[in-house]
Length: 439
Image 1 (cartoon, rainbow, N blue to C red):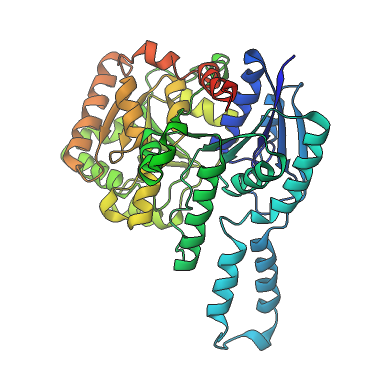
Image 2: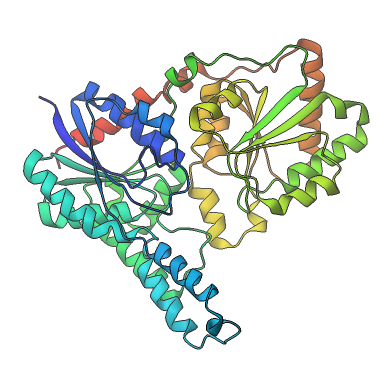
């Protein structure tokens, strides 16, 4: 009989944050193969969810039992208050003397993140489920970090094994935390590390960071990277028409942390230096593209070369990857960011790089030294160039265009043995070994 594991995950289809959902979906798909029966504890009424993808519901195995609970979302309540104030003229143009108090309350209600309102509902449901199913292990996977607070409370109450997975770093980097918030977050992280039985991160960089912070706990901290499921790509045809332009695609969000400005500058230099190549390539941005970068497209005269495509559902995004010649990965250089944002890039895993690898396409990473850069180099699946090195970017693109015009494809030799280690089945096997360990 399979042992039972309760997986705590805020994001779950149809409401998704893709990197997290893919990790969990592949986990529940392959865990039974290694003697574990997965149960899902998730949320059902979050009005702040960033995306809904009903196609992913079909990826939930029929044997998986999914339990959904209510949640109170502090920021949703705040938005309702703002809406009322906006419609009430008595609030307009008045100095807010209570702002410091309001910011303190905001911090209090959003530690460790905006989804902490799920805590009481998830804990009560978790206790009820354990009484019925007698789980061997609780497995909490972030982001959001509130998942781990749920796991922590259940660990205290139920006294069963608890495995913590940090898909992203603990802090919500990029948000301006107060000193009070930082101290409380640090306290919570210590409680999680101290009380967990095993800890998993998805990058060696964050594993090393946690080991530095908690040297007495280093033996319990492990790295298990993201992966990809080759089955997701088997039924997708490479439908790119022959004799078309060389197609670069970036699939995902472009924002301050994933800033295309240095890439655009390199394209401008390329077009000025080699004007005949301007008609031989196109760059597709598939996903949320911040309006702040639109002026750069005009400034660098790139309208002919840039194509913006609205966000698509997961399986459609895989088609874009598969039909491209080169896949782009963009991350801002460290010098452009404040300290917490630097850590966000350095420690985060950029899960889409694994789907890029699964698509079998050459990856051009315009990124600083980071987890994604390490993976691309390790698998020999493309090249990595620091964003500020414009001349190198220009030469790289120029060479690819000329090569494509000559042979009609981008040739490279990835390490197939190392790629197989990234199969979702293999990743789940490693996680199962963590679950199997008797604490």
